[in-house]
Image (tube, rainbow, N blue to C red; front, top):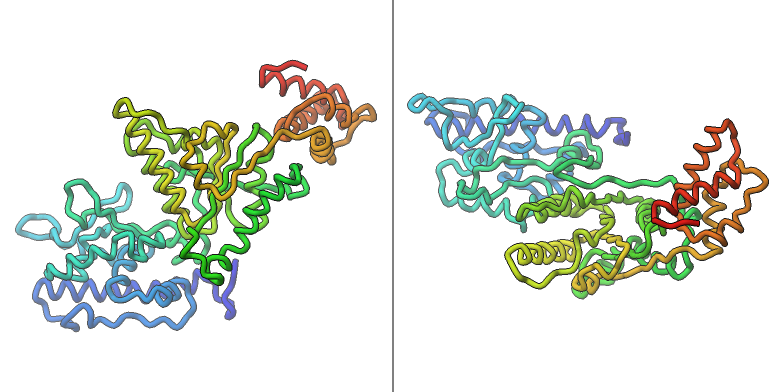
Length: 453
């Protein structure tokens, strides 16, 4: 855990700030209720309730200062986080209208599946900030548009498109990323789920374990150079007017040639998280669902130092077809949407495919680099065998120069052979791999591809 210079943890600092902010929110709620029901209160206007001034360096305090959040933004942020840190602050909204035996419509609110407390909606925020002032209420819509920092930085959101429902009907939701930052102070690393169908990749290997043609490594170094110098190019050199932010690269070539490992090593080298998108969870037969699933990924990845890796990308970014019916039109719209999201993404996107010819030409035109990962030659295969088996005890009959010369298989297949050989040696009670183990392992790999030795 990272500690404050005064040995106060980020969690403690945030908790102190949040306690003050929740007490302020409670007083704003009380003041608005007093005004709504013509009760004598301490303040004549909710804006008169003094906002806490934070001196400690909590993440919550820094966000408020850095984003210059005013009264309205702070109310919305405090409302979105209240159910997570102090839900009883919102209990006043359970006040019932005795005439209709239900809570007041202007309070808004939702009922959770498990949570028994009050879950605020946009209506709740509008009531606290605007009261019965229609002009003020209408102006609040701007705080939830894509241009606002709440949406732009994925801090919180309010879905303004709820079919025929009123604008402020949906729940006020703080992102998991900012909820983590504003409470524990820890960086949020999402887990694989239906709402985020991507898995974080990591590797214990290094660049020395990756055997590639020098020309391919040279092209990969361009991606690495962008990751290292993008800020200088875009900001210091002022090229943001001519160049779009982000970097898009296509890796293509036979399976097992190092495309995924290269993406992992780029992230490892630069200290960035690499997320592999599970296309089986993204693509949907239902209209609009694929775009929605992709939007969830890109929205969460926005403004993060992540590398998004799409393996077997032609399944999602394939060629558009001639339009003959509504299904074709929708499929083409889907590809167009994906193209736009990839192009607008400010981070690094790597698409990998075995067959470049399957990719839509509109995508390939927009890649900053297209890198071919060929099957390894004899020398590279020898190095792969040596690297893979270097920590394994081997019999004297093992000769990787013969194996590399006789069998044209890729690094991924060699790793599979390594696993087979290790298990086979242990099954026969030996701690050493023999040439027969390797030969049998190669036969097994070739059978997968419908080949024979």
